[in-house]
Length: 137
Image (cartoon, rainbow, N blue to C red; front, side, top):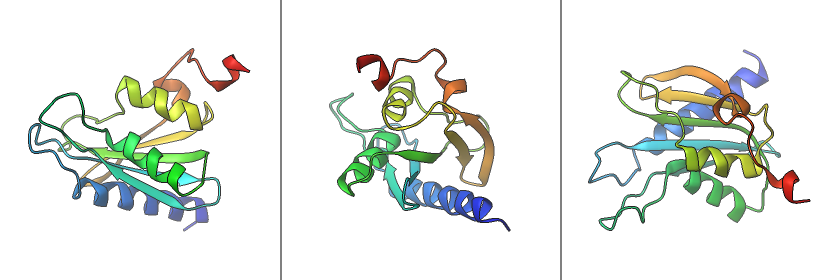
């Protein structure tokens, strides 16, 4: 197994594990996310719902916050795990933009469900013609 495949497997396992820590009493739709940062560390997050919708946090936003709190600023790869295997659970539009803040357009986005890996997209495929930090420099 290559190092790249091992890192992808670790990321997928972390995202699926984060699903189990989600707080989703209203939607009953747990989502987990795991980010691989520029130094090879993994940061996880889960969705956290709130009775006063839409005050909750998405899993991707939680993982990004964990990465920032660890002093890192670059998403090298991200895995998102959710759903029951019937449909893909891709990042919502707001999270695609959040990921864009810290990731290159060719960053791999691994989509998973509780059973494992489903499909890989680039960030640019999920968020074409996006607005990013370089537009403000």
